[in-house]
Amino acid sequence: MKVLVTGLFEMAALHAIRRFGQLGYEVHVAEGHRLAFSGFSKYVKKRIRVPNMRYHPEEYTEAIVALLETGEYDYYFPSYEEIIPISKHRDRVVAATQSVVPTTDVLMTLHDKRRLEAMAHEIGIDSPKTYYPESSEHAREIMAEVELPVVIKMRKTSGAAGFRKIYKREGFEKAYFEVVRINKLAENDLPIIQQLVEGPTTCTLHLCNQGQVLGEVMYQGIRTMPRSGGTTVFRESIEDPACVEAAAKIVKHLNFSGLCGFDFILDEVTGRPFLVDGNCRITPAVTMAYHGGVDLVEAWLGVANGGESPVMAPAKIGVRTKMQFADFVWLLESYFGSFKDWRGERKLRKQWWHEKNFHYDIHDRKDPMPNVMIWFYIVTNCWKLIFTDFDSAQLFIFHNQYVGD
Image (cartoon, rainbow, N blue to C red; front, side, top):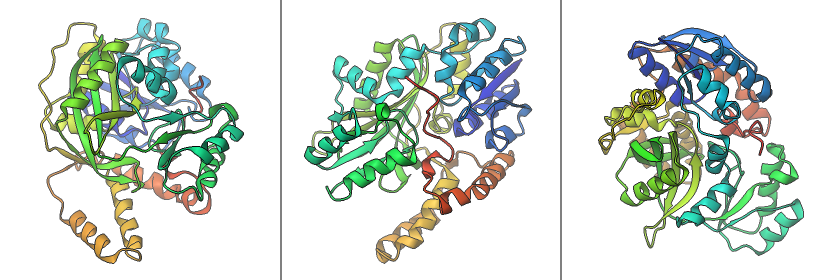
């Protein structure tokens, strides 16, 4: 049996490819970039070049749907936000192959932060006070009056692209419009301004079927890049009943089927979870779930087949996974940080070098080429990070102008 996997710059795609291969499926992959690292796994039988979704979303989507309509594939597994434009052709996809593709409206309710907040309020889940500038002048008015600290976020993005924490009024406007300029945002898509909730972040990943959570993992970040708060590069699975309850409430409200996840910040004083982000797709936490005894990829096949799927046992607590290339950049940044805090950074580095008992998101001695290719991709793109104001968070997971409204 054959499966087509897309979204090859997402580390979860690599895990899915490896699991499908280990389960005996013939894996084909499709991507618009020659250096998409997941496509170089030994489990990939065929790599297919399609238009680049970043620049040609409509052509990309049509090419993927056309591949599925050849009738060659038994399953289609989208690994990143290509699921959003693909969902606009949902009827064609599910007629051609077995897959799990929610409606565009459901996906955008999770993906668009304004719609996510509105839904949270509707069903009684806490979320931080958020402001939505209607114009650049309106943004300036908000910045002059809003109570600090706040965070700047783009409405529709992933991987902390455009994320900034603001503690002082000085430099606020400059930081805000820097995000607008770097990401080429239009007046009708300006970044939001959100009250900062202080406390630990709990992130989740769930496999769902018709509003029921079948399997899940929850984790807290040990390290992030950027350090001020962003993508989690070293993480550990935890138990968090309050977030379990809140996530289940959202899944039930949306009658969601497929893979999704949420980010909650736990208030330092009350411990209440505040919903700050939603992912309408799989995330790298799938690797943590697998090592914690919850195989979400194999279970996804059951959902795609349309049958009843059993609820899975809770994931093991204390499982650690690492995004090694990003965590290595964190280490390099620590050496530069020594100029400001020698003792503190030395302590952090010592901890880094002595860490044991964790799993890698990408590196695997039995399947080494994806790790080789991701470093090759980074090296060949270093010029963007050094000589331009390119947002490093968009090197792999980029702001999705391809999504639209």
